[in-house]
Image (tube, rainbow, N blue to C red):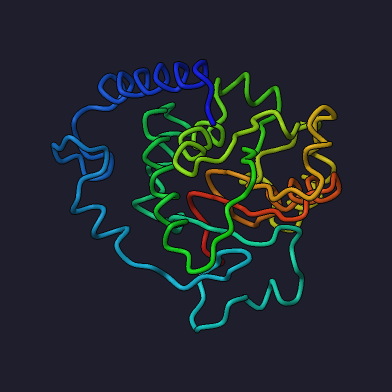
Length: 249
């Protein structure tokens, strides 16, 4: 049950989001540029988002058959229990995330949350988490970028799912190099001991189902490291909710 203060804050955020949508984003599709009142035009939605792709239940990598788990997850089970993604991180949809992350087009975050919410609703088996936790940025990168794209997506997603958001549940205790700039064989070591659970929130994790929210999942080492920290603090289940999944090469 939301308090009156929470409702006022949500109304203010909604008004700000609408202002940003009108100010930051022109009245045209973010992908094809055609004039339309929506951020993404109906033809682009139908062309790029209309099909459901079979995916591994645990890591969300594409599958060619009816198996529920991919070979990699069968051989080496990650710390997280399941993953939902809205689309593959590939052209042209990757532009939506690039515009948000590096172009600071924050008005795209609600659209990405909506697309992720649609993907969640399409799951045949879905257990809602008890709270959402965005992947935190390190202090240096947060100061450089000015915002955490995972948090910007998690805010509207939490409202759509009606699940509490805890943005300060996890801390990035060690600044790491961006995973995109690290050799694949070094990515796991790059994130070793990078995350910790904030002491004041640790008691709430015992037996809890945590939903970790991020923009892009590539190797999975980032969300796996955070899931490991959650499980070590007592979480019973960890679900990954990620807008885009980089297909395996």
